[in-house]
Length: 72
Image 1 (tube, rainbow, N blue to C red):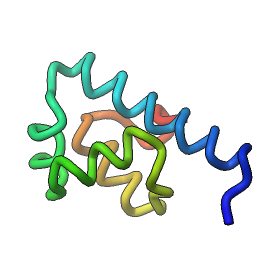
Image 2: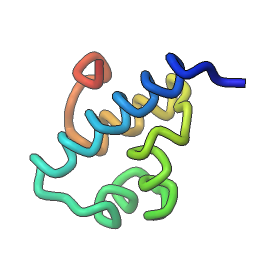
Image 3: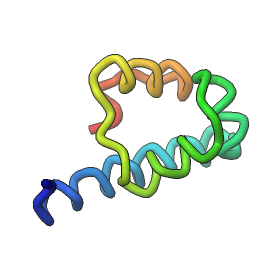
Image 4: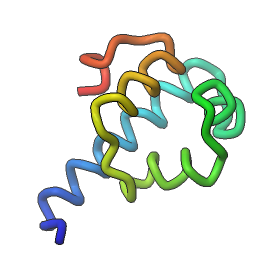
């Protein structure tokens, strides 16, 4: 079970991903396609409902054309 602190961390990560995606001029569908996911998956990610593992974070960073460290 996730603590409130964990939930806040995931929401913060999702917000960061969303902010970068928007700065890159991509909508959710375009971003989803670039990482091989669907739009609802990206929506859950950006809303902090997904706890992405390291490989998923690498995929996200590649899709956003940034380094993984830039997500934190």
